[in-house]
Image (cartoon, rainbow, N blue to C red; front, top):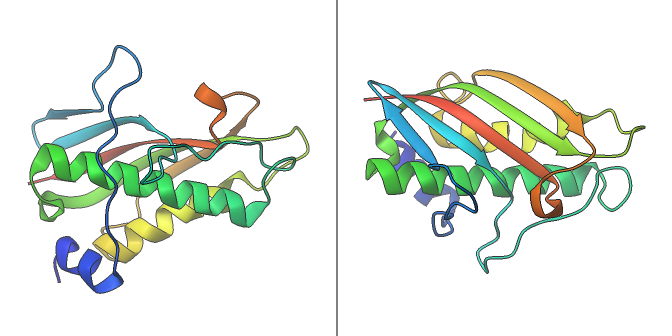
Length: 153
């Protein structure tokens, strides 16, 4: 089943592709690899999910922020490639979680993104290598920022 069909079956509508808030490209394609710049949890109304895990947000709130970030990433991929069916696999994700010093569940937070990619691209192609790190600050106070590398056709 195609990624586009899985989105329909899951009842997922993607938000508009986010626009850069700095001097960078949201996606760069080199050969059969798409490199996505860091994306944040952009909601359909254009606002961002902000806060610190362990203070303002709990684990579930962080996972929701990571899932929302994944939706923004899918929007960028679709906008640039024309269809998500061109994505062969997720190669690598780097997730940054804005959190307190005591919060240590960064991998579980980024699972919100990884689970959505698994649902859309399948359990083999949708799960790649990954790192999840905590940080004390992210742009605009966002809860998570995720960048990715994808193999494409």
